Amino acid sequence: MQFSTKSKEHVDACRFCWMCRHICPIGNATGQERNTARARALGLSLAARDAVEYSEDIINNVYECALCGACVKECVTGWDPVMFTKEARLAAALEGKLPDYIMTMLSNLQDKGNIYGADLDDKLTFETKNSDTLLFLGEDARFKAPECAAKAIELLKKAGADFTVLENEPSSGYSMDFMLGAAAETKAVMENCAKALSPYKRVICYDPADAKVMKREYKEWGIDLKPEVLTFTEYVSGLIKDKALNVKNSGLCFTPQDSFLLARDLEETEPVREILSACGTVNEMLLNRKDTMLAGNLIMNEYMPQVIERVAADRWINAKNMNTKILVTQSPAEYVMLKKTKPENIELMTVEEAVLKCL
Image (cartoon, rainbow, N blue to C red; front, side, top):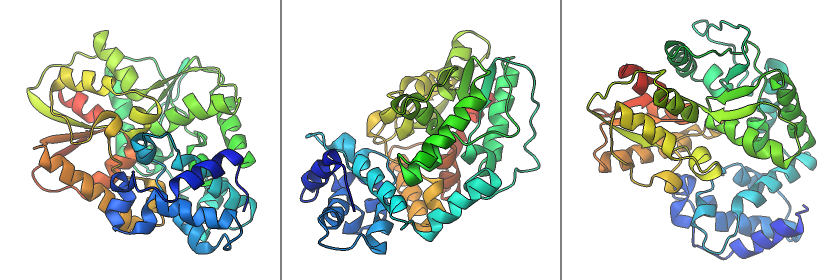
């Protein structure tokens, strides 16, 4: 297999270093050394030197990474396992060695318009109208968490916001970027989305995953995205500040589960706290803001569900240790997995549910 010079430098630096092994949510869930950045780098370094074949086992290991960046955040010397993991996925695609479970999701995207091969829930209805503001819901919310999408729409309606949604919403390219990295096919999906969004002046991304690719990857890949992109939490915080949402302090105590995509990739941590402070009081999670830990990934749940359930269960342990009463998520993927593993005596809400409860 071939690596760029930069990625090879990072692989060689990481392969004998244990600095970040304690912080990986997948490694903590499995308890296996293979699920650490060091072990992944060691396997990839051998494959890059043609000492071993870029085999099915090494490639499967590459897809056992959530790309959450906890290792990158933890590294004081600036190495980036996420970068070489994504490049290794691209190499698997270029060499025709993608795992069957990845090929299935790619086929689903082509045939059904979403990687899950799912149909829209009958309960999720869209009232499209002429507006220069679009609420972009994303694949996870539309096909795996339609109740979250419906609540987000309900909240913006209560605020009297002028917005619309797309019944046939294109993929933002996040799932392709996760599975293939910087492939031509990934860029084509992103360009298709950018074209579909071009009539709007503003796009509100409900899912942090979509906000991340639109704000970062589109720019890095030279994709012209005309509308301004806002995160859902950023937009809702503004609605509260502008009194469009008359939120009443309920006296309830909320604990935010920071999305790593917002906290680490987009460096957004305060809007969710502004929202929850208006609704009640904020009790911080163990490991919060940029130190947050992943609580779920629905792409990986398609091929390693038991591990992803354990990742969510581990986050509940963190919540219980901080005496959390109500855990509030920003990510539909994390909401789905946390709901599936929720212990008794702790409530789980999305940001929009917390606000709706306090109107």
